[in-house]
Amino acid sequence: MNSADTATPPSAPVISVSALNQAVARLLERSFPLTWISGEVSNFTRASSGHWYFTLKDDAAQVRAVMFRGRAQYASFIPREGDKVEVRALVTLYGARGDYQINVEAIRRAGVGSLFEAFLRLKEKLEAAGLFHPERKRPLPLFPRTVGIVTSPQAAALRDVLTALQRRAPHVNVVLYPTPVQGQGAGEKIAAAIDTASLRNDCDVLIVCRGGGSIEDLWAFNDEDVAYAVANCRMPVISGVGHETDFTICDFAADLRAATPTAAAELAVTPRADWLAELRSHVIDLRRAMRRTGSEAAQTLDNYSHRLLSPAAQIRQQRLKLQAQASTLTHANRAPLAQARYQMQRLSDRLAALKPDVRAQRTGLAHLQYRATLALGTQLSQRREALAAWSSQLALLNPQRTLERGYAIVSDAQGSIVRDPAQLTAPSTITLRVAGGSAQVGVASVQPLE
Image 1 (tube, one colour):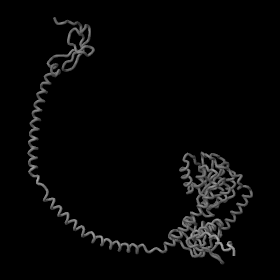
Image 2: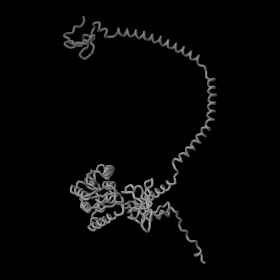
Image 3: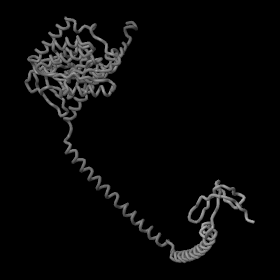
Image 4: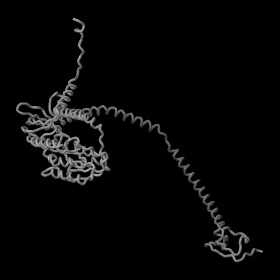
């Protein structure tokens, strides 16, 4: 044998079971798109978390199915054992157990498939007529000033759209074209509302929307008149009908399809660049991974919930442990507390023995305070008598007292006090200030004192 035959082959990479199951789950999700599957419901269970677990079977085979609360809340009915149903599901793998299963996105009673066949026939007819050609699609305006909305005034979708528009572009004007979105003749009324918006031409982009529901609830948007009204509309049309997994003829005829009414509002007022096309593939993979991770976590949580002990029993057990620990803590603290109290009493007695007697000092301090008060009162009386004497002298020198005795103060026209007749000229005016006021006096002649 040569050395080449005895060489050790390179070791193959080793992966964990979790990595293997995740790889198989990604392979299944990419290989099988969302598919409608018919069968009979068996072993139906509704968990406390709101998730549905059941088996979908026919005469020859069966498959496990799970419908999570986020999707189950939109179902129009709760299936029972033996019900014939049709589900729209994604093929995947529950990694925790390695079980192959389907994640149900939508459920309907068997027989709704006839409506879906009618939907496909109309879709093929309109596609052949050229209504869905990409060349007919028009780009959205970069800066729309007015957004039109075709929906019911009572629809929750209208509130979602208005909230999104107010949050993202409060400056944009909104025009509502009211119409029923469900029931007999709703398709004709929706088409008439779209025609009215096109005729008035007072908005830059038009949103046709309503909330999610069954295929019967959304059937008004599968009307041929609605498709032609959308295709012939003057302004670009965004279709936001139903939820992400719902498709209608209106979606294909519109210039742009939105996953939800809120998404339609976001697309209408937000300019979208070409990089969104590149991001969509990453978003799809990320969304599937997050959905799978959330699905596995939800199923694992449901499995663990069955193993939980009674909360009341756990509380009783913890209460007994707490009582035992409280008793131990009480006994442990009692001896140190008694010792601390004894020590505190000894220190209190020593403090009382060492405390000085200040009664004599207090008596001396009171005597000094009395003497200070008496001296301060004597000085205050002396100062008051001096102040009274000074006030009397000041009053004697007060010019007002002189004026009250009949004297007057003479001032000229400039306000200067006249002390000499030489300061006066005739004729002129002088001011005499007396005790009770002042007077203007004219000077006829000036005679100096001889």
